[in-house]
Length: 511
Image 1: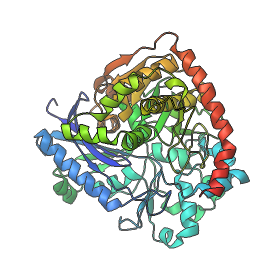
Image 2 (image 1 turned 180 degrees about the vertical axis):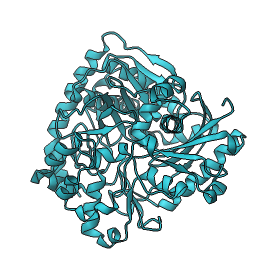
Image 3 (image 1 turned 90 degrees about the vertical axis):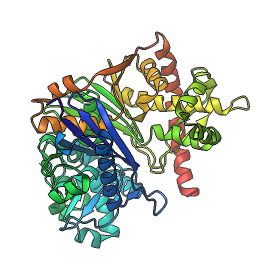
Image 4 (image 1 turned 45 degrees about the vertical axis):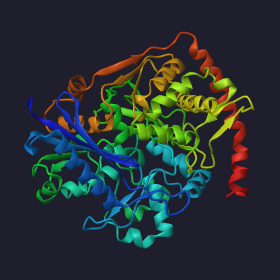
């Protein structure tokens, strides 16, 4: 099978990517295309589902063409995508409305109401996951109140990867990694109707699809779709796990004791465990991983690399434009600038709560907002740039410190894994080695690893990890630097605590 390949599709929040891998996990070819990102109202985030599918078609065809291989050489397709969110289809499999994305903030008042009434606490006791604005079940409650006719027309409530799986195979389903943190009992690891009842949306239970383990959510590619994509009819398509778990798998974090951070649009900080981790209560997620017997305890921040993208766009726009003209890399240039600033950013601290929906980990507050503190006339934009890098690191440290389990080594995924500065900062802050795997498309690699196990290419996830994941670089902690980050974390948390009342005041007076 040396001439065999696996195709991975990753439906991100803003970009759709397709990547071809060989059976050793090496990236052979790939393509990316903008997804659909709509903001019909302030704080809303939606996608036109048909546009997302067309982006998949474009990237798959480009990837196969660039690889210059025969379609018959692709032995399986793995699909992953952004988690949470609500992608509704009717009985014919057509979209009922634009998808509501995980980053949408329209349910903030509902979430606050359910926490105040005790429902949020009750849901955490069942699912091990804190109710937040990303949650699909709370989206159903919002739709029931504001668009009941939409739900009447709905046959299945899906997520991003499930929509692509439906387009490719005609099958309406989800998988256990996506469903477990929303609808499952964390104790029985099975669907629990009490969640729907607590939120008052039990009448829509018929639209919640089956959620098998990710290795079992598979079906053959439809003939007509195969012609559209340029693939072999009937090639196995396997959907799952969703991007958080797929990225962890794609960098080798698959077994209890492993830790992984995904520095992408959001920041996702994960510990692999063999049983539910319910402390601290009322924050974060507990969910099933792809390998049997493994769960993921995770704290997901609303934003991560988006902070740097925003700062570069607003404060280094001319340099960014110049880099594009010259074919240079703006991120490498910014990293060199930040390296010239001292650790601690000359006393400036940045809180990376940039999303309009606020923050969800390691605390939940829809009014939370990003801020710089400690700025004086002696500081420059380079100082603020260094503070942005450090603010993202402090948010990671904040999450792991809150979870309370020691991190003995950290596997890094997401676009932020390409930054040596972030990797070294994290090694210093955690006082633990940070491992960056070969390649860049970790979510897609996790999806094809799952597909390889599902189709018998490999007999187990352990074998898939051994064959398909290799470290490219390891960053060792600098002795003594952890103490500096602990001091910064203490100030970072104290300032956040002091801002809680101010954030509430802003929400009522300035919006």
